[in-house]
View 1: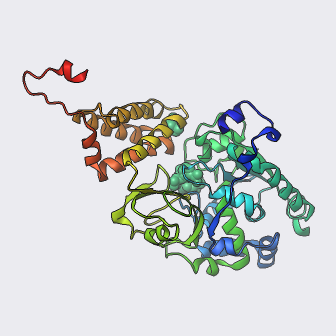
View 2 (view 1 turned 90 degrees about the vertical axis):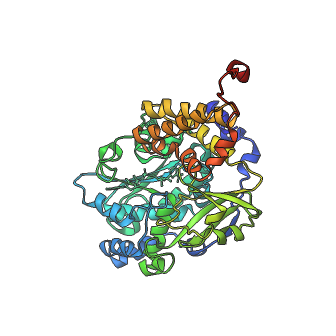
View 3 (view 1 turned 90 degrees about the horizontal axis):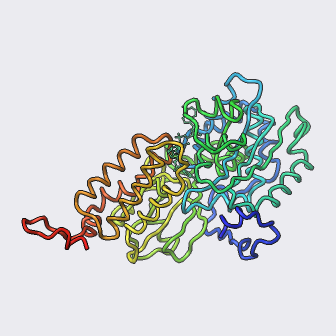
Length: 430
Ligand code: NAI
Ligand code: SF4
């Protein structure tokens, strides 16, 4: 168990061999994965084109953040470049923690140089000299390999002082996470980078104006940096040539669950969910969780829907459930996950997610009454509306969305007790 390994600080050399045998299993490479760029080519092209023009090219591409939320990348970089400061930072969020997401692990295992190229490009465009790769604690096995790639880039003049002989200085450090899901939230990640406890900050101010050490900071997902490097080489029109009007380019998905061919797939945005299901060999599909527990659980009636920011957005998670699964088991699993991962800073989430877990268990285990379902819904609203950060604000989504779509599933679990006069309540509860 990974958590135990980290807590006991077992040296890497003693970790079980099976742990390192994780297959990348890339099933359907598209725009990005098929056309990986040569080291240095993004930077060379950007310098030849002009840095300002390259940012315009990224704007033209329509690239939006690949971590899930889809904020305009060019706008983020521009905001950061324009913020008044003596120092700026670039941070790659590789704390991939969304349940069902493992594409950043694959990208860092197979395409890390292009990710570093994207970070360096960002640094050149915004004027940063220091970058950090915040790597999920469970991905520690990648660290040595990534350090070697960074060293290679330094040796090749693509990192360090006077990159490509220009007045361009930038280097990247790797910082290891320690297993907390909340540190994937960008402001908690920044706190953690600063050596503090990973508690989310109030946003705004966003990191573009007050990030690492309260200096302007760009925080982007692994895939976003990779895409930006490819756009620097191939141009904005190339990227915009795929996808939809509002969701340009492609998305890399981690497909898991009840399907014959789980793995990494890359699709142009706008692809129908049923196409993805057919490609990964999913049959008897009951539903798909798109975007992890905080995303959407869609039923077999909605398979025409599209993967796109304007329809179904995801940081990468795509989990298939067939007809043998009980939806409430899935909801229970996600609800327990959030209760476990709540950072404990604010009461509505710390206490609320625990109460949610207890209340849901009571119902799913067959001890609930109709009033308990109403109380569950009320609790969901409380956690959603009063929590400090995105974790708490979305922790009730699995319950709320299924209460809305499958109310009968909850009703079926209720204890069959009647309150007719003369009814022996004590007897019924035994
Ligand atoms: P958000 O919409 O608040 O922000 C998205 C990005 O845009 C952030 O970098 C933020 O700093 C920036 N931003 C937003 N408004 C801005 C403004 N006015 N000025 C400057 N910058 C601005 O979303 P958030 O809370 O950062 O992330 C939520 C997403 O993360 C969800 O879509 C969720 O699915 C996803 N997620 C992904 C995980 C993964 O492993 N990839 C794990 C958990 C959640
Ligand atoms: Fe921490 Fe949850 Fe509050 Fe976010 S909502 S700050 S995870 S306790």
